[in-house]
Image 1 (tube, helix red, strand yellow):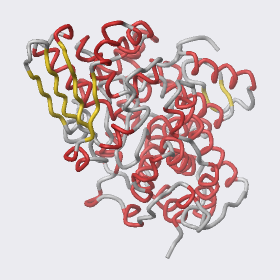
Image 2 (cartoon, helix red, strand yellow):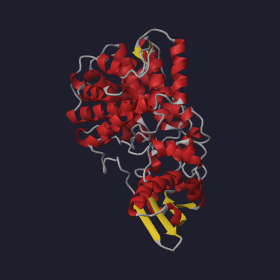
Image 3 (cartoon, rainbow, N blue to C red):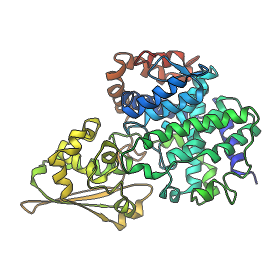
Image 4 (cartoon, rainbow, N blue to C red):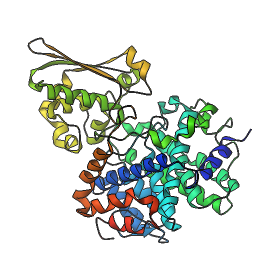
Amino acid sequence: MPTVAETLAKLALDLTPETITAPAIESAKTCVMDYLGALLAGFDLEPARAVRELVCHYGGTPEATVLGTGAKVPAAQAALTNGTTSHMVELDDVHTAAIGHPGAAVIPAALACAEARALDGSQFLSCVVAGYEVMARMGLYMGIQHYAVWHPTATLGTLGACAAACQALGLSAGQATNAIAIAATMASGLREVFVGGSHCKHLHPGLAARNGVTAAELAWVSFTGPGTAIEGPMGFRVAHSGAGDRSGLLGLPNGRLHIQDTEFKVFASCRSAHTAAEAGILMHRAGLASSDVYSIVLEVPSVIADDPAWGNLIPRNALAAKLSVPYNFAIALLDGACYLDQFTAEKIASPQVRDLLSRTTLAASGDKDLAYPLHTGVRATVRTRNDRMWVQDLTVAVGHPLRPVSPDDLQRKFLGLAEPVIGERARQVMKLVLALDAAPDLTCMVQMLEARPA
């Protein structure tokens, strides 16, 4: 039986422009567009600036672009800053099987290596598809128990980024196997970053992208990794609390690829809070005034109710608020929206929000447990001062493949994020992305993204 690293390496190299289906390529283009919108929206935020300035300060061989600038740095370093920036506003894509955010880890690695190697658009997209597929299959192999303390965007994202880089660098099967094994020894990222409001959660996909590229580059120059790095008794699976279910490595039936099941966000917060945000918006639209609220009960999966980040009733900063299920419900009920403007310092500290949170209780729900981890549902029950009851019960978040966001809405999302940063060029970038499979190179798209001079 081949090792897990051998299985993933073969997968990474087999998903080429000649073998990938047209629907998967269309999904990849949408993922790239969504990634670039999130990156541009996060460009001016402090953690992104700090990483970008450090990367540009160190410089190095000019291989790949620091997106939003004209600066070129080594591919691994470009992947670091471009991955970090895309995760700043919590509007980057998510994937249930991957247990995290594949776009923010995979796409910057694929793009940096593709640009360094002067690949065409079709080759770049196949690298993206390969990265998503490896990350998702590893998520299924590890299982949700991996999420207890590990941040899969960082851990599984490293393997997905490595898969993308393996294909972009044209590695052999042996080299790719070593690369995956090397990446497995480099993958890390703790969920403790979810509490306290530090910059580390934003950094995790950037580290995954950088480490994935570095692992592939090391294998390219004949560096080796342990053959059983993933399934061995002291390997990735054991260290990262994984189930080791090899059926997860087999892929989806009927030739469907995991990138086709990517979920796109319509709210600027943690995916686990999206049903709560939608419930609040629906109550707002139905006419419930926040000033009439006497009490709020949010019935959620047990893991949400017990989690210090998801169950946080007193968020003090934007990251804490984006992760807090109660905050998402409260601000959505108050504003009828849950987007970028709902996570400012002023909103988080507002007396109206604090009052609603003080009236909120989280309760574990057996029926929501049944749907988890595929879905993080909520049953919101609001009792008003005149003793009226309002109830919203949601299980599937909008943006999930069962409730997809339309292509037109995703294009509007991209333009809404990109136009404030790059102006009218946003429409040109969108056209270039949607035609990437026919693009001779990536130069024009990358140059169009420049928001600031190097």
